[in-house]
Length: 384
Ligand code: FAD
Image 1 (cartoon, rainbow, N blue to C red):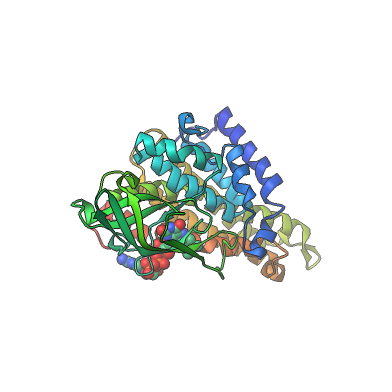
Image 2 (cartoon, rainbow, N blue to C red):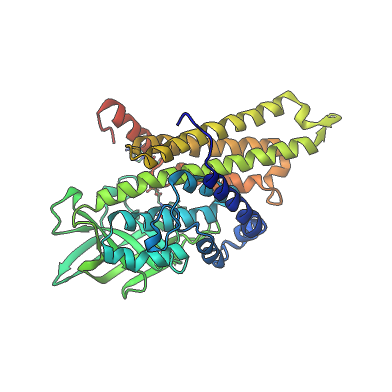
């Protein structure tokens, strides 16, 4: 990680993402936020340009590339609209990449071409009404019945929930002898007994289809099991370890967008007879944002580099996610301060950045949970 120069391929993919965001996302982001719905056609477009297949093998419809390229694209998407960034981080980052890593050949061939092309959308069903941070304590049950499993339970706050064609679902499998008895299943959302309800009124990420999923006697064949029975908690944790890098990259995008907006506005707005950029305390706000952007980006790229070199990365991913999410909130809040009262109304971009940033300190492990992960690694003591 000493050489920070991007390869030609990485620079090209970042430019592709910048052009895509300028053309397809930025002009629509405010309208999608107000309408509480991103135009679903964006998923096919993301698939066509290869952004839903990054890091996935071309044999399964993927577009290849390394994790740094994935971070660069994720950052640009987050710079344009966190709702769209989240669709990719979940459908590709949490679902397709997990199927690629843990799935049988049959599961890869069944799901990956659709997920990478954008024909299909995936969602990740871990959180429940009663278990968020303590995810291993989940209550959804999968009971063996002949060659099938019958699943009952409720999943909460599921990104892409109402759009998804397949849910990577975590349930306590009663026969499982393994860690915490949790197993992972790939459940088509059209399966009888699975119903969904959109959760409205979110503070941010308003364009995203966040849902509650209810499973009542949902019957799936044994072939729906992803990985071994009882290994589901490891499947979830490995997905989230990479997922946290993706959230961090999205946060770098938010912070960069906050910096761009603050610099531009400070140069245009005049008070006390001069541009506000000429006031030292405004420069302080801007320089604080800039340092947050750089620090968050470097921590995030380090995770990508570790993954690409096959090194352990989970704790570094928690550090990046912790810092970048808190930095994105600080950066958006500082940018709003630069905008003064205009920052508080949605004709200007920074209020949305702050609303979208706020959830990043909550999902895929709250900031407190990231600190406990880091603390456990340093002290050898679990303090959950
Ligand atoms: P709780 O776990 O109840 O935590 C409440 C507070 O207690 C927090 O401050 C927390 O940090 C603190 N706390 C809890 N335990 C400890 C501890 N041991 N020590 C110190 N403090 C602690 N989940 C999915 O499975 N899939 C998704 O796609 C998904 N998308 C989401 C999208 C949105 C918009 C939102 C809001 C959430 C999403 N989630 C998703 C759920 C998200 O991951 C959880 O909200 C998160 O894990 C926190 O769980 P909780 O909300 O139940 O809070």
